[in-house]
Image: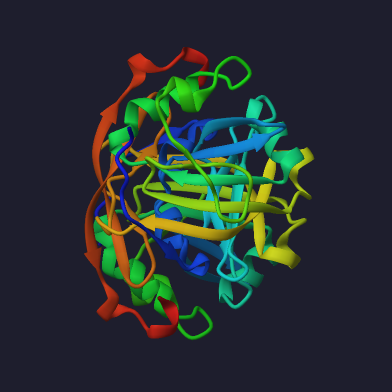
Length: 186
Length: 186
């Protein structure tokens, strides 16, 4: 049985807190009764309100059509506790295996979308497609984050940041320069 | 006089090595004889070849029009040696000050664009606007990296990753899982 950790509702307008530093994420989806998970590293925050995140999801991914057809997904934030799972999920195809079962991950029911949350992840961002204008040309989806839940502690999880060639940078120390900022520039 | 460090030409198809982990970057531009610099955290790699990077540059930035009109910019990668400068550049407007002069940065001549490189940065990615389809709606520019130069050593610089509220995550340890990857999935 999976460890149940406490998560709290988090303001969708503040998801940059987790996504702007550039972590690799796991994207879960559901279509016609089947679920899937993919790893994804090409994403950026685009707006606070509505809470928009742009992502490249290559058409060769089994998840591509599941997400496009369902119009939904969940962006899940893994920590270094899941490093090997992150790699293995990226190595396999949902056309062949059930990734939740294969990698002993727990699909939790989401609040606003049909796609499942990954319980073992530090944060779960429920998304709906907001704009698919650039999907045909660049595989670029713009999602709106419609619900966010994050683990209460630690505040700064140890996240994975991919550099290509099988190498990850792990998030390091936290430094504040808040005193230097003009308030409107935070 | 600024310290001159050795930089080498770097394949533009591999800039994900530096940008995918999500560092804050400094964007330099030139228009009508004036230069400017802005900080930017909302960006993502979009393609290897051509080497595409998508970025959100808010219309309120003095750089927005300089980049849009010139069709060019340089994405420069600062390290923690420049932490305070990164914040101060984000706090000020190029409409009022010359940021190269004010922050003692050295504008070096770029190879393929008119916008200057920032010598004190670890890497310089010369960019041309590739697609401005989403600029009016989302301030989202797609740039093509046409030339890249990076400092030879260290291979993994200490970069800054913004989390909002004046707080940065500093890049941490490097871990390889290359042995776990299927070659096509690196």
